[in-house]
Amino acid sequence: MKILIVGSTGLLGSSAAAALRDRHEIIEASRSGQVTVDLTEPDSIRRMFDRVGRVDAVISCTGSVPFKPLAELTVKDFRVGFEDKVLGQVNLVQIGVEYVNDGGSFTLTSGVLAREPILTGVAASLANGALESFVMAAAAELPRRIRINAVSPSVLAEATGYHDYFPGFQQVPAETVGRAYVKSVEGIQTGQTYALDQ
Ligand SMILES: NC(=O)c1ccc[n+]([C@@H]2O[C@H](COP(=O)([O-])OP(=O)(O)OC[C@H]3O[C@@H](n4cnc5c(N)ncnc54)[C@H](OP(=O)(O)O)[C@@H]3O)[C@@H](O)[C@H]2O)c1
Image 1 (tube, rainbow, N blue to C red):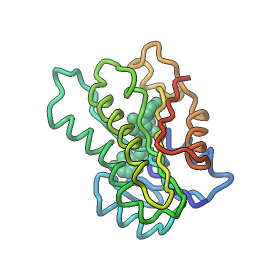
Image 2: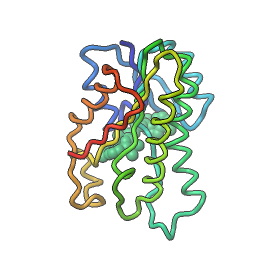
Image 3: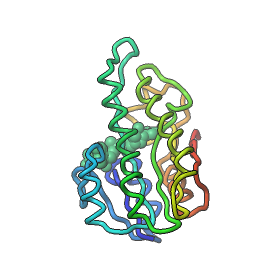
């Protein structure tokens, strides 16, 4: 398969690329990558697909959301996080659908904060929950047997800088996360969120 991975240079993106690289053609994209794209800019997404052409699978491992106490979160903070993590990936699906071959797939990335809270994580919880609901509903409307799933990991074992913010949370190895992207791309499921809590 020809697989486009947006955010391939990051921790999750590199876990997806490592798990799929042996058996597939991988195209790596990010704001500073081999193929450049900024998911917050619809025109940039269109330019990326025009350059890359048709693909069998699109994986997104991006999304940045402000972490602040609820009392300090402004409407602008919510909007910035929502536009980056949620609408960035939604735009990728809506623009990308015409470039995905029949029976292909999208795999988005949400995260554990959709189902368990941490202090300062309200905007991230909102974004992750929205993404997972989008995946559930969009699966029913995508054409040509195109599938869509979300990978929703707990904090990664390798993300040591985040561990203090996730006290007592089970940490997930990057290799386990990579396998969830494989399940989404090579499997037959759609509308699913793969919650990786151990
Ligand atoms: N790390 C964890 O433990 C963990 C756990 C659960 C969920 N998640 C979620 O997984 C996602 C990725 O996390 P991560 O830790 O892998 O992040 P990361 O290491 O910071 O990597 C982010 C990747 O996305 C790219 N990127 C960022 N903004 C972009 C944009 N606007 N357009 C295109 N590419 C963009 C970055 O490259 P450029 O800077 O070159 O664009 C990079 O390749 C996030 O949504 C995060 O919330 C992470």
